[in-house]
Image (tube, rainbow, N blue to C red):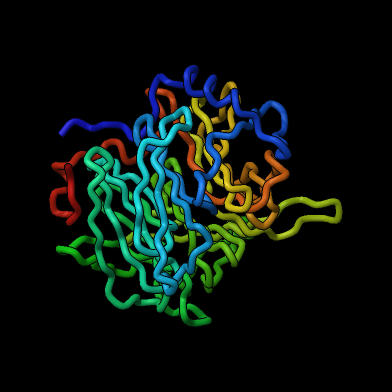
Length: 360
């Protein structure tokens, strides 16, 4: 099966011209960045969060303020947009949507609901609009699942809202589909040992809020333990060489550094492209652009600021770039080049036939 890149290639001039027509009001981006509104929440929907991109379409999950454990029995929506912000289709999912990612091999959209408890997974075919729901068994940590990452032929989930303190359950699990069921295996324990990046000391983790997760340009898992105000970077996950690093997060104030809670982090994979990020309180998705980005740079949505900023991966200091926000969350970098960095594009479907999930 020929690989289709889950990126937007060669569309930058057209895309950005369309977005500049809708300026942001009340929110400010530092020079030389340009901030614009990609889309406002459709009528009846609210709290946009997770964002995924497939070719020239953008998918945004709307949580609508519903119960994160699904106990209210309400639905969430995932809205599919064109790159000019027009709506293509709306998908309705049972529960509170949080995690949303595109499988780079099958090009199917994975959506996780109910991050606090009673989780479910829905896999969406964007071409046919068909949906299939999968169930989880009792979770090993007592909570739900928040986000997911595709790495090679495996998928990893963040195990959110742990029931115990200290967290003796897993903070990251690997997942495999078995019929209509999602089987999971522990990958990183909530109380694992890690190297603290700023001090170089060995520390014992107690991850009380595993949340968003992504890949860095080297293929490491990057887990946001949101309430703990730290990132956990895991290399060689699930192998004997697995290693965890801890990066405490902060930002500078007039009186000195202050710890800060963050949500999604996005890594720049090319000099050409733009960032998309959502703000749950302002009910909007924004674009952040400039003429050229520095590949490898990390940007993060600091909901504890609240602001969007550049993250120093050595010190953990976040420098604000966009201010005047309410509750920034979901974030993704849209690579418009044809030569960006991404560790997953060398994987094809034939290599992953035994991994347990579906293709077109």
